[in-house]
Each structure stands twice: as structure tokens, then as C-alpha cells.
Length: 77
Image (cartoon, rainbow, N blue to C red; front, top):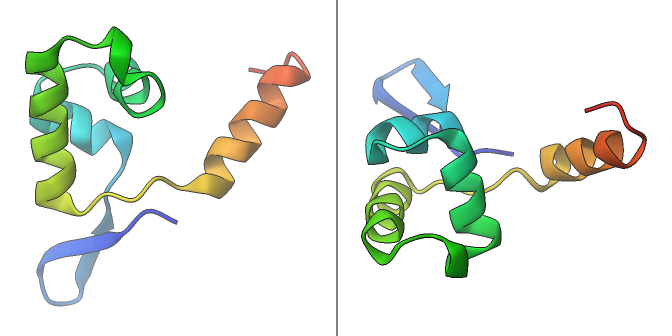
């Protein structure tokens, strides 16, 4: 599950790849590439993404990733 974070008490929000992408000024696809295949992402972009990951404490949702992979294998993406 994505780590919950919030600026005000009682108002938690999920940190998603979209959140990381916005913070780093890249697309969600680029964040995904950086997490799964960092060798294909430029060093400058990778650093911006890593800074956003560190700032938020983002933890990938393994269940969501497995579900997405399962759908893709079945041709349902």
C-alpha cells in the first residue's frame, strides 16, 4: 500500500506515482521507468525522482503492480 502522508491532522492522502511525477516535473511513465529500469532514465531526471521519493517516503504498492501486470498479460490493459 502507498504510504499515507498528510499536511494537516486528519487529512491523510496517498502518495502515488502521479504525486512523485508532479514533484519531479516528469510523467508518471518516467517515474515507472525510473523505478523499474533506472538505467534508461537520464541521471538528472533520476536524481529529481529520487529526491521526490525521499521527500515523500513513497513505497510502491506491490499489490497494485501485481494486479496491473496480471491485466496486461490477459490483454486487458
